[in-house]
Length: 242
Image (cartoon, rainbow, N blue to C red; front, side, top):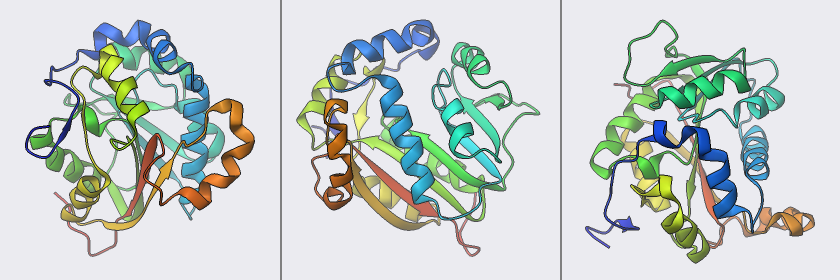
């Protein structure tokens, strides 16, 4: 490890356009022993719906990739207007097929589809470990600026304390630039951006074959052994924006 970061290996910037068409197959190859990718997506979106205690009129997924989560976000937030963004142009082309009523936008490119600054929920799943550590504060500031008063930011990340997670990330070609971050780092990024940290829970303790045991996870949420963790922030009216 270098500079206190959980670095899997030397960071190499991943070109997600290159992996977009094979993303699902690669993900299934590396995680299939635990569960299929649809299970992971449903798990995270359903948990988000339980953690956010308010009506969501405007919802933005930051780093939507090929759009696997978008139909599930539509399912669990049926009345929401959905924005979705990513840096990969090819991924967004595929995402457009998965959720035709989502407003898609390429990060870093000026577009009339860009998400407004009054989002009720910003959903981020497995993105920050791809962001270079020295750029994470600016990304968090950007997300905070997109939230309206009392809006929620929900972030899922890989748990660097879990050896199985570290093994999966180490083998995955589109995680070649991954630098895992501890929950404390993510919490600090949010609070420095003016957000209120509400909770951090560890998740994904059991494979799909032990789905019946998932009811136990609420009692394990403080145990740092889950495959991932989820952190929830809220933007209060006094929160700083950039």
